[in-house]
Length: 503
Ligand SMILES: [Zn+2]
Image 1 (cartoon, rainbow, N blue to C red):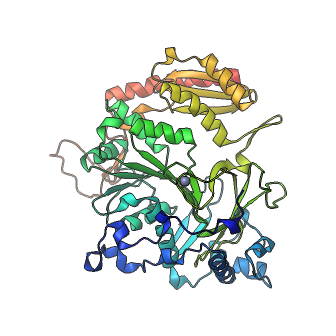
Image 2: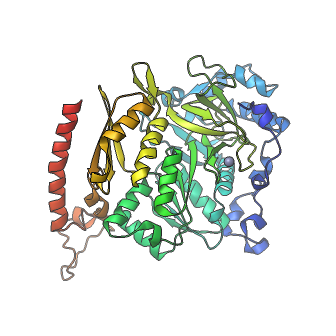
Image 3: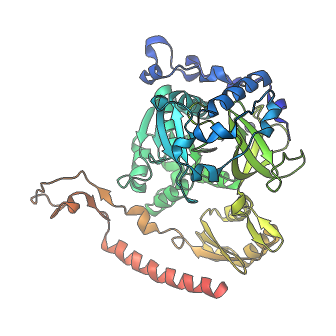
């Protein structure tokens, strides 16, 4: 493992500050209007050498003392060298959940531009305060990750606008770089998958940002409509995903499906964008914006160089509103050996999942990363990436959809996965539509603007009360859809019966 202090080499050519000529924005009066809000100097503050990193770290520690939770914790502690960081206390997720959000706010409220919260999928959501300066730094990361945001490029932003931070960062980055934004938050009723497919085609979208598995659902929706996504959207250049880690086979299978590049961002609302993938698909740590430590999950001591897996600990460099000191992410990571062909001076990692998500069977431990990667390496052989894993007391039940189930050997899949994972695996091969409900993909509630007057001379809608004037549920349902739902219900019943027998 490369020590942090040795990672401070000169940035590669593609990591220099973003200039107007880089973005093709020209200069002076031709700058996109959003530029006036930002200094455009985030790139100038990159902390690459040890002296600059120490300077940013000292700023961070001093700034953190302004947050109530750090005021006592950091009392009397000083950082004279980068190594001194190891003497500071960790910040755990439980700290974030156990205090009011204001306990982590380190600057005056007048300087706060955004407040966000994580989804809260593992309990209470955790907070993220951002000043304008903080947002600018994060946008700098997005700029470098996605050069496609420039003038003339069309970006569909499917990140949910409430409540984590990526949607707003992407929106601001697109405005800053001069691209065209189509905001279609995936958690809004009135932009279902069918509408997304229509927009991709009609607006010649170049980049889609959002949650990774949506690429699977969109592909399945298109298949249901008789479309092949590889041919239907010639303008599409890239998916830019965050919110879940994609293993190499996840990424590869989506690229096979769509014929475009898939990129990944790893980070969190409370910490920021820790890493983004390069053109080779490797997640590079943003060591210019953070000091990263990789520690033993048991002892919490720094890992030896040859240790395979450790927990990522991140300290923000220069964050104003919510500095994080030694944030213990609980994510297990594996550092990729050797330099990356992309030339980046920063370490590349694989994120294996949360330590608490390790699946234990006797003496065997399986990470989510390895589980999904092994399954997908097999399912890609028959062009499928639709699967679902059920953990039972006897092992894993892996249910996989295949376009031609009769040509896929479940017993061979069971043997192969059992060998690779070291846990008993039973595979079920199912026809399409058994794991993904195709009916729900093409039917979604349509939300209308609230109204108090309804014209009954118009055929389509008959509003009879106020709630009917707000939402039309299942607006596109037909008799065929209802019959399909009924058939699916019967199938699901018997599927559940099979699972009970197995478990
Ligand atoms: Zn790389």
